[in-house]
Length: 211
Image 1 (cartoon, rainbow, N blue to C red):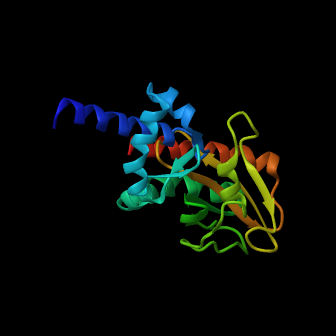
Image 2: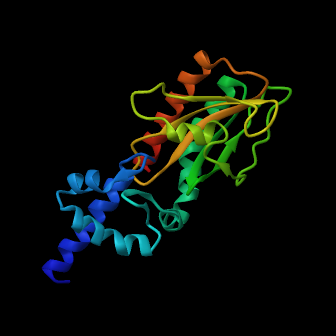
């Protein structure tokens, strides 16, 4: 590969990393240009092949990761499950609620691993692969939380009537838009459960970085 081609590849990867570092938020062309030390025109050029392969999605001047990243990461899902399951088991037992790790694909979110508590008489069965819009349910709404805001999202009656959920984003894992949460019949004490979910999300992030 020529030196020019190597530089282009390096900048393209840096751009993809900058989009991923937006933590699920859309990044602007200006922000990306500043992040990789390139001009806006250069960023536009680099986005063309990335968008063509579905690695990024662009709406005007706003950019976020595309579903092509998840296709590349398809082989990683088993590793996600292995890393998250022990953390989710502890969370489910502590909260007496079904714990889950959910990931976003475009505008949809789906659980990739769920763990049910062993000691409750009743609990929610949250099916792996069940998809719903990011704006519905705690799992998706957690992905919209900005840094500096309260660390978890709380909902009632979503995505299923009669349930409540609390979820927190998994931060610090480049390229991954994911959340950890619990869903239960009836209500959840957010002041007690919320910090536990945030702690579990951080533990999952640490496990994934070390896997």
